[in-house]
Length: 420
Image (cartoon, rainbow, N blue to C red; front, top):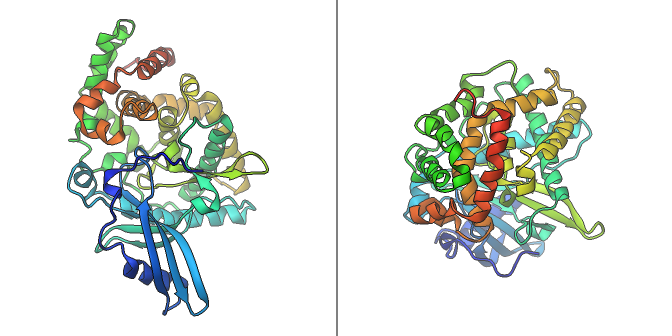
């Protein structure tokens, strides 16, 4: 069940004026193909908790309506762009986020599911989108998964079994995308806008000040000071070198690397798990929020997951067991769906992960303090992104310092500091 003590994002406390019975009635009438459908009641509430997301505004609606066949109700999720003036609107208004996500729901993922079904695999990769538009406003509407038994894990860490569900689904998605890239190289050409195509990425203080704050923390923690020279050496160039990694598929493709259509934001709040009462555990996970999905190295989702999804003990081992399990499902799915390209190898995957080290440097220095602070309730997401003082405090949280103390020796052992 969803927690009853949830704090909501301020911009989701009041629905915009256009989100009314007339708007929803028109959409449902078209979706149900019933011209004389009439909405009799519409209740609108925030759809997500603080910290669940940042790159959109989301509402949950319960719609009561009548048709010639009787009375009905339908729970819906409304996703739209921020309308309140401020950082979120400035950051997102000129982005490709909604066009990307609409393409994922209406173009890419239906084809991925079709390929899986033809191979005898009925895995569901997405919830159907019943309405979408880019003009006059950017809006997407979905059926609500909560009444279907799905929930976001908030009040406790995910179990190993929960994480395996998520990685298994990602592996199937990645496998099908590899087949499509290999056999229909133009089919996914629209998916070229990831995090580093955001219009404000080069000027947003959250991104541009992360490494300096990280270096300052290293300097003030005696046992970590020895790592400071490595990061000082790259502080002025690492973002440009990271962009080379992120754009490898589109601009610098290599024959000895693996590429996929990635999720782009593979963390716990972008997953909804279905509880099975008979098993007493979750038996399915639905990935949501595909706004950053793009064609890129297979390492992008995997490296991101180490810092943004895994629990500390798994992170300190660089996700070894979970990623190896993921790889087994990836290869099994490639074989099942008749992949005709060269089969990836486990050693090749790890070599690629370790080669793309600048994403690790970005995540440990910029995203990980945010994630640790939000998970521990020491900081709110919007504060960490918008408030430099709050952001600075996150670098000295005990849990974050402990993470860094465990990870940097791993970096050293793996050779991440060689040839900087």
